Amino acid sequence: MPLSRRWFLAAAAASAASSVASRPAAAALPADVDVAIVGAGAAGIAAARKIAAAGRRFVILEAGERIGGRCFTDTGSFGVPFDRGARWLHMPDTNPVARLAPSAGLDIYPAPPGQKLRIGRRNAREGEMEEFLAARVRAQRAIVEAGRGKADIACAQALPKDLGDWRATIEFVLGPHDCGKDLRDISAFDFAKSAERDINAFCRQGFGTLLAKLCGTMPVERSTVVTRIDTSTRGRADIVTARGRLTARAVIVTASTGVLTSGKIRFNPEPKRQLDAAAKLSLGSYDRIALRLPGNPLRFFDDDLVFEKAAGAKTAALLGNVAGTDLCVVDVAGRFGRDLAAQGEAAMVAFATEWLTSLYGSDAARNIKGGLATRWHEEPFCLGAFSCASPGNQGARRALMEAFRDRVFFAGEAAHETLWGTVGGAWESGERAADAALKLFGSARPKAPAPAARRKKPVRENPSPPSER
Ligand SMILES: Cc1cc2nc3c(=O)[nH]c(=O)nc-3n(C[C@H](O)[C@H](O)[C@H](O)COP(=O)(O)OP(=O)(O)OC[C@H]3O[C@@H](n4cnc5c(N)ncnc54)[C@H](O)[C@@H]3O)c2cc1C
Image (cartoon, rainbow, N blue to C red; front, side, top):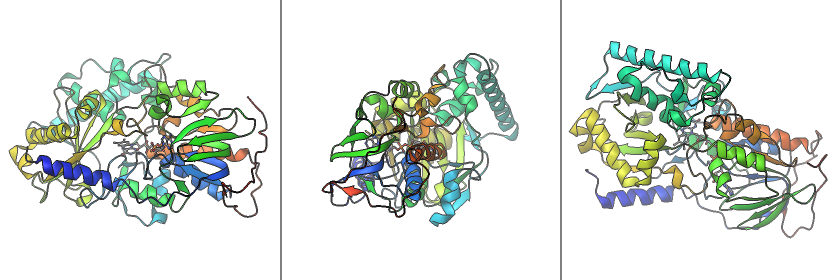
């Protein structure tokens, strides 16, 4: 491997540093708000924008030191934008985040259509590509058909038997690559309900940069881990954080299903239905291994998406020359990706280097000038990539969306029936939760947005909810 251990440690340190935005001096938390939002990812930001527009007092409580959650652009490690999480803006014409991009002044451009396929060290011939695409369409149709049946099954059970030597590639593309899980772990109902994602765009400055712009100057309390949400007192929620307590009339919780089931946030009383639902929507595994290949030695076009004709589960997807830079990203996912990530960043970079060598020859390894890898399962306030219902459990998405005691609203990518696992889905779920929370205040808008009360202020506003469950 051409990477020295020293280089590797330096890159890892730079990556960590870049994810630490300078933190404002810790002022006291507001004592009392209309709406508290847990999490400054896509769902939290979308909810906050709606609540701000309605003139209500709110605060975003974010455990980490940066905003964006699983949609974050690292600009420090390579000097060019590297999206550690979300990168693809699916269906840009209808994607709520893509539609806001022009107002953020960022450059959105269409992703090249289709993909390339390597067979050993050569590109697939036209006929081979046609065979692959036809087999892929057949497999996808079979799963969607099963997803319309009476009883839910695993996607793997629905696959046609005669996929021949395309089976492993198709299993990777439809399972780990598209959903973060192996097909045997995915509900056919969930798969069938997910909306099409085959037209895409990219943000040249990074998807995370776009999200951060949309957050703007909204009040985000960083490094504020919410540890307890208590709704035992009528008409209010008492929120305990590592930096103090506050009271809210409504709470929007956008933590991932991994965090919800980890017990990091304690609830009193417990929203049993929603926590059971979160367990059925566990997070899959998806990680990016970013490599610098200066001078484009492998002759990629910009944003080339490449799969290989795989012989088994140990495979990956490549995005070459990301946004015209010398960054190439190898994505690993599903059970194989998770096991690889558990071995650490060095093992991941080594795998990507060997994989590229197997597809492009030893020149590939010689030309790699640095690399790093994400490990989303190790991020303490994400604990994985994105949700996917296990077989039999698609209905959990609706259960997660149910309001708890009229004042706790769960949002986030898992709380969307068709756009789960995407930034657009998280965004729409945040807006939905904000609409539900705003209903508690009636339609009248306050004359002027009041600043959130700080701790010293004795004012508290805790009107009773319309009904108690
Ligand atoms: C590698 C990878 C690639 C992806 N690729 C794409 C893609 O190309 N396109 C796409 O659309 N989507 C993609 N996704 C999915 C997308 O990133 C997510 O669906 C979306 O960002 C989730 O947003 P969210 O608001 O639901 O959750 P999050 O982004 O997880 O936000 C939740 C926030 O809550 C905070 N939090 C958690 N617990 C607490 C607590 N106790 N107290 C306070 N704060 C807390 C977290 O720190 C986090 O910031 C990808 C995800 C990954 C990991």
